[in-house]
Length: 164
Ligand SMILES: [Zn+2]
Image (cartoon, rainbow, N blue to C red; front, top):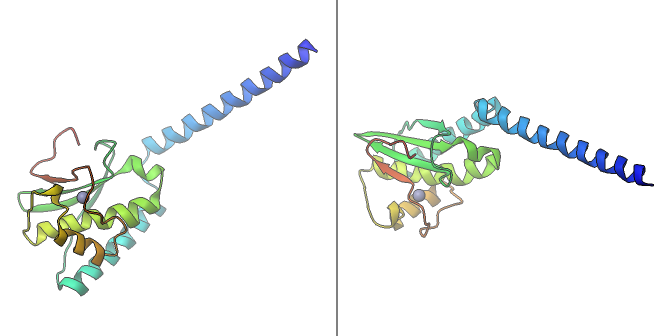
């Protein structure tokens, strides 16, 4: 009887360790490698679609680079950066592990709306740039995360420092 309990215990321990190893391996794989080709392709398609919407609604041809970085703060999904006339969007690579859909359909249009405000030379410093005009742009870009009362500040004016 006792040896049976021991065996079951040993069995459970082994399975748990294997699972932990598997999770560790998967995380390491994700962290050490760039995003999969499939995700990159989905980002490119969305980018293309957003550019088309901006052209249709605002008559503007924009070309805003989208960078993927794992160096920005964990609680930020993305950032819109304005540095001396250069505009770019940075998406937090680590957040793609949880949900690609959220990053592409929610976060990207939200940041694009900030970037378009920069293109329009509209630099509000109220409410982290989440003004009524920004919200309208975000909705026009079919954004799903266009609420104005968000706690974080996801726009950067000037060089981005190490904290991002
Ligand atoms: Zn924002």
